Amino acid sequence: MVQAATKPIPSFLPLLAILALCLLPTTGCFLGDSIGDIDVGKLEGLMEREQRLLVVDNRTTLEYASGHIPGAMHIPQEEFYRLTSLLPPEKDTPIVFYCRGYG
Image: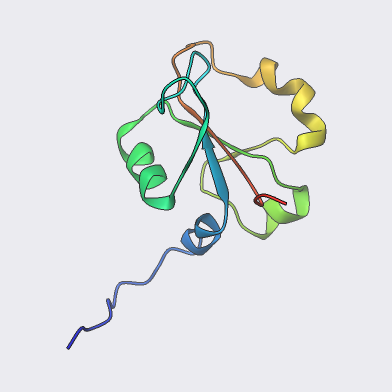
């Protein structure tokens, strides 16, 4: 018999499960020469070991207000013009963009 875990799930994890995540450091991608999707587990690992990780929430202001990854910077798509002024000076900083998903 398998017993369900009694540890409560943090409120942002279900949100993460439905988001399309993209990993994009400014000098290249951890996944080789292309940008790729990552899952919740990989993001959690990055958040634990990458002290300089920058998480950018690309959703609307209403979606962001309804719940977001703790510490995420909110830059909705219509404001991406200001992205370069907000990037960290260290060019090897890993960046994760997330949004509502495809389609």
